[in-house]
Amino acid sequence: MTYQFKSITDCEAHALTQPQTGTNTSPLKMTHDGLPDGIKPLAITDLLESLRGKLQLRDEDLAYLRLMMRKLRREDFLPGRICVVWESVTHIADQLGLLTRQINRIEQRLIRADLIAKTSSGNGFRFGRRRADGVIEIAAGINFAPLINRMPDIIAYHRLTTVAANQLKTSRRTAADLIAQIRALKADEALRAARAALPRLRPSEINDLKKIEAVIDALEAILADFSTTTGQTVEAARSDSLDRPYTKTVINTKTCTRAENEERPSRNVRTTPAQVHELASEQFAEILTMYKDGIEPGQAMSWRVICTAAADFAQMQGISGADWANWPRTHEGVQKRPHFMRVLLCA
Image (cartoon, rainbow, N blue to C red):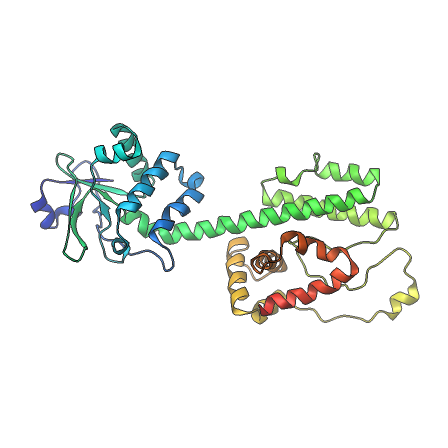
């Protein structure tokens, strides 16, 4: 959006909000609503860089934005303020080592992305004036109100993509762990069945979350079938992204007797995901809510969300993903993991 006016006097007469005929039919709001709590101005470009694919930003676009952010003052980002850089195109081009026409193209791309708006005088002159207290009272140049007002949506999308990326990474580890267990069976038929589900046996090559979850389901079934066939212990253990908690504390083997089965106590009590959310510490409950909104928006709390969040929260507490994944591989680990889950809920 390019907005033009004839002179500084026109600006002072509040003509800044009036677009020139033929450029844009909607008025430009010079002031903005302020940054969300906890977001610093210099963090804006980091967020944009993490979403560069979604926003279709190039390297030179990000370099331009970083330069412009450094030219603004912290108080320019306060609600109700004007946030404008009025430096000339020539000067900006010199600082970035680019041509003026390249700067013009960058600004046009950012305008189309609704990240900036451009205001100028009739001859394209950029200018601005600050009061004695540093507040911009009038300016014509590159206005960052569109970007600042979009920051809540940008942050929400960044969190969503972060959750999805973490879940994909967790699922890849789960699949790799299952493949390792299938290899340990030393059964050619089991390995052939695994290759039918994942030909190259490389979970890192899968970038689609639904696809890798389908592969995990297939690998779990293969492991269960062939572990029973070979008489080996069937481990109910999975890595970080369990769809349900561990509720069995007894490892079943092919040699179990009927008498032993009859002696096992009945466990009919089940903890629901909603109860876990309710009993969680304030910090972990907040993380659970964020993960639920990112993974299963609009749905009730599920074990899938809880286990994914717990795995990442464990890393935040200094427990590596490898330690988390390896604990359930022994009987002792199976006993420890429910206890550790309780520790997380109280952390």
